[in-house]
Amino acid sequence: MSKFELPEIKTFVSWDYVVFAALFLISSGIGVFFAIKERKKTTSAEFLVGGKEMTCGPVALSLTASFMSAVTVLGAPSEVYRFGASFLLFFVAYTFVIIFTAELFVPVFYRSGITSTYEYLELRFNKVVRYAATLMYIVQTVLYTGVVVYAPALALNQVTGFDLWGAVFATGIVCTFYCTLGGLKAVVWTDAFQMVVMVVGFLSVLIEGSIQNGGPAKIWETAMNGSRLNIVDFDPDPLRRHTFWTITVGGTFTWLGIYGVNQSTIQRCISCKSEKHAKLALYLNLIGLWIILVCAVFSGLVMYAHYRGCDPWTAGFVSAPDQMMPYFVMDIFSKMPGLPGLFVACAFSGTLSTVAASINALATVTFEDFVKSTFHNLSEKKSMWISKGLCNIFGIICTTMAVAASLMGGVVQAALSIHGMWGGPMLGLFTLGIVFPWTNWKGALGGLLTGITLSFWVGIGAFIYPAPIIKTLPLELRTDECILANITGNLSTLAPTMLAATETSLRSPLADTWYSVSYLYYSAVGCLGCIISGLLISFITGHQHGENIKPLLIRPICNIVCFWSDKYKRVCWCGVQHDREEELDPNDSLKKDVTMQPVTEKAVDNGFYETCLKTSPGYEPTEKSYTNTAEDKVTYM
Image 1: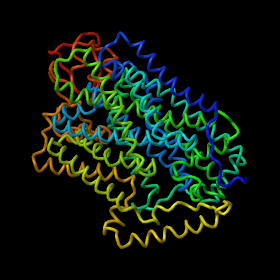
Image 2 (image 1 turned 90 degrees about the vertical axis):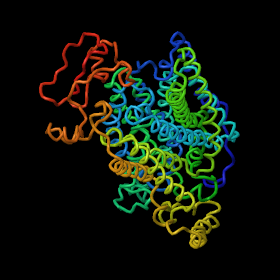
Image 3 (image 1 turned 60 degrees about the horizontal axis):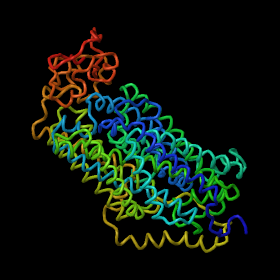
Image 4 (image 1 turned 180 degrees about the horizontal axis):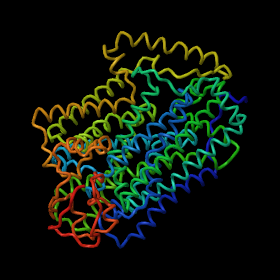
């Protein structure tokens, strides 16, 4: 049989099962280890945020593993294979995202002493805004987690013939098991292990694929001849799926909604022992994001070089583009037992880390935002058991949501579309609170609802009326070396024409404009819509007076832009008394974690006494050894 004939179904051999099973056993073992190690620590804070004792290293690996999930392992190489290496431009988007998260959002959340990100919204606005955002986050995360559970199950089904839904439920059970046993510490350390597995899996594919296809130079030449290296396209057309602007601008908005204000990310940042560790974890995580991105892009180029004459997707050897990567792996590793199992373990590593982090974050926001506010006198033991029960409940819900994910199309676009439609308005809401001191609660709530309406309008419209084929057509995919080359080629040439003719009379007037906007702009639409409408509503209903806002709850851009002038800074703070002394209130939740603590250099670094404006003349911390009480005063520099 020639290389490109319809292949017989390949399945795992015993060594593949051994490698794959080892991933589950080690992941579960980490949960058991931390359950035993932390058995004497029975507080909900220990379970949900690791007692705020984490260091930057494991948190950085955990952040990378969680958001570079199986969606990236399976979907990104397929994107590069079909559309070219422009996916590499996410390198720029990731950089902007980490800088904004580390310098704008994390300092506010960390210094506020919160556990749930949405506690901030009650401190800044009121409970109505907080509960609305919490409900949005729960729905968003459950939907997204469904996608990342389904993706590796699809890979396993493709390469081994295992039952698809059996794989889905096996994933959910393992994640729920170690998340419930070990809490956040188990999640973080398991993620660190799984990150290593992901990198090793990618490297094995890159090395063997390069050897079989003539080496890196030959692969690069083939990719260039196939137009896969036309990376930078400055076309400003927002209807184009991937250009420099859609990826760098739209990608920044999309991923900032994931990183900057997402509970799963912020929860791990505030679990660090100091704000300095939290920021360092984010910057180290950026290096991890770059590594995974480069591995995914080059895997796609290697796969293109391998199938340059016979595209398995167009030829019908696989039924969906997201099955290309596992198909490729089984092809190049057909005579190397154990390595296919390593790749599937790589895909599942991303999923296990993402699902476990999501379950832990969902349990945290539900407990902090709903349970604690309803039942005020819960003992620590009851709090711990409720937290573990919530982990089990959300584990079941997220696993069953994978059924819906099977109807969403390509996993990358589905995942980022979900984050865009939900994450954009949420990003806008937190930006209103942190950056614009004059926003009131009516503006915040109205902006959130407006942003949701706009992002869902464009997102659902695009689902009902897909973008014109010319805007989403893959680059050339040849089938002339396949057995069914002539039949497949005719079908692939005629199908778009027939489809376009059928759709023309049925399309909405907005189908070729508003509904055809790149999916990467969904987040920008929701975010900007939320900010603009929120500011307008605030001014119409009477803007917030700055003197009523706690300085640690905002971080105006003037901290960076107006660094040369104290006068302009005071103007941009909009009346917030950032330079006055304020009495500590022992009942204020904002200060609950600093009352009766020694004011050491570490405490200063941790946040409440270190403020946004260190540029005030003559500022220097003094008296670092006394214990503060409710009567002590703090100066906001």
